Image (tube, rainbow, N blue to C red; front, side):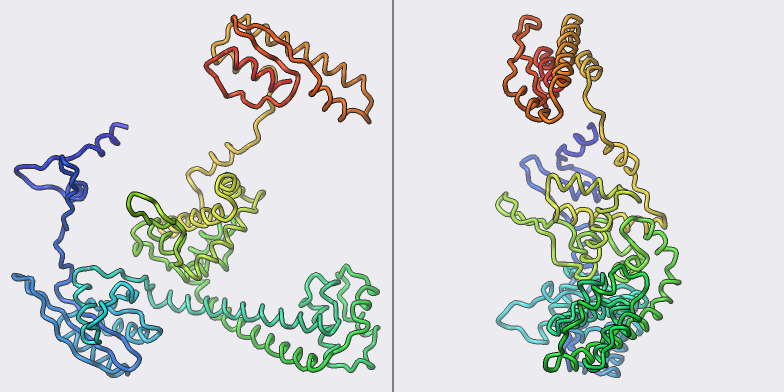
Length: 536
């Protein structure tokens, strides 16, 4: 608490001496004025370059800053987007001593420029066009290149995260495999729609309509004319482990009819599904190299519930293995679109919806969070976290919060080369255990903690004991068929017992609806009555 007060104190202006960097950032005058000073000056890169990328041309501008006057001189030159001209541009940058190059992400046209400049020894930086957008009115390619270089030397450009070359290759494979998976799912839906139109209801008797047995039967029906279809041949294709009976399987097929071009459509879909599966198999073979290369990190990530080795490989393809590129775990969560937005104006906080970042990483982490929230046996850590958040914020916000917690844990696991073991793991597991039911001993102990005298304790014991005996005798007298009605009726018709504790009237009812044991803890009389209501 003392440190917190010390940090909130205002610093006064010194007449002599210098301020440290931390003091400059938090300097506040007596009148409330905040003083913010750039620590290293406004010019971060005295020599740099900016490129306005287009499909056919590249407008490059080299910026050189005079060390004394701090005036900038720009050298602008136009290049073509061919590979040879890009290498010529890289050599031109080297002749001016340029190492840092900034460019805007224009479609996919920036990728060859980025790769070739990286091979030429430059350090290319990619930024979103919205951060270097030129004002309307006098916008030209020449001015755009100068504007990008000018903002880049002041470090006013927000750089996009571009992982190393090997991680970029892993990312391309993972994203392409994901797209093929989506495509395969779409084809399966079309296949199943054609089955429904053709009155083939194998999806009603098989749990997986694309399993071995169902696929064999469908292929047989597609390739055979209806009059040549044999029930015996169909039953011979059914696996012995299938739970459905042969009669149900035949009933789902009898009367089928391929209307119009449904047979041809099913043939094409089957062919396309086979091709997609072959493409996915080839990509998996390529991914085996990365699985072996990053096997240690994948094993660490797989120790977290909800994250499999496959999903761990996809996560590495999105964030890489070098966590030093992120300022901290909060920066990574913000980039992934899992942090609430900071949008306030005129002292009012507006929408705090999460951002749109992480188009591939965010859905993946949400799927992992859903799996972790359902885990109650293997490791219920995230399950307990989810249940706590769900009560206050709802399902959707709780899942986003769990996804963010998982990403923060992944950041530290990769950075520290360690397995999943949060600092509050044991505390969360033990604090969520079900508490024992309230009984007379617990009530007496609670009243002692609140300072109740001996007369009050004896009165509570006597009244509660009498009430328990009366309730037991009453339950024995009624029949089993009238138990529920008698219990509900007794709660409504029973008269409260009025007693006096320490001169204060206390009402002790026979119902079991007292739930405010922690209310008015400083008043022993009210605490006594509340405790008795909870017991009875």
